Image 1 (spheres, one colour):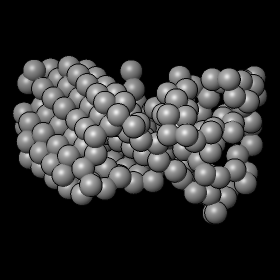
Image 2 (cartoon, rainbow, N blue to C red; image 1 turned 90 degrees about the vertical axis):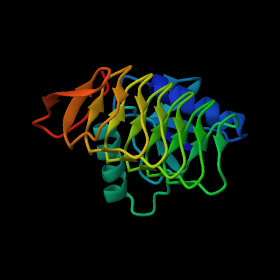
Image 3 (tube, one colour; image 1 turned 180 degrees about the vertical axis):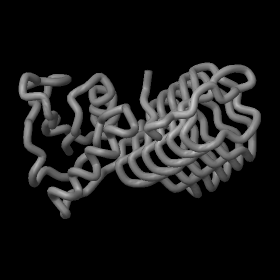
Length: 207
């Protein structure tokens, strides 16, 4: 197994894989000055390396790296990393490249897309759909029947009531309480969450 992204986030994924008896052979990173991460060597060329998880927390960069890896190596396979303490319904679906961290709960018929992060202690309830490249931060609670669009980041400790639609490429600020639909490409924050910024570049980042 290989992890693209020599970072703190990558170290957590390495620990998850180790807890499942999977050895991380090496990290891969574009920074030529980084040669070790989490006790493993760091390589600087991903060609021919597989299976892979892109261990980068920022959604837009994770997507960019995945697309680059696919373009350069059509045979690359993307694995999952699911912590043994996570509770996942047998009817839930989890996409390739997705990471589910310690203490997370994913309930019945939830769908988690490709290359997502469901972080420590987060809960995704029944019948939710979390599209590709989302990050559900630590301690987030998403109630049943909610739809979260591609590339959205839901900040630490936020809560989302049932049956809402949160658009793509959004940032939901830490500790927010989302009680109504959120459109695409905005930053929303507060209790209740309100749109405070329209994101002209249509990209979400972690801050």
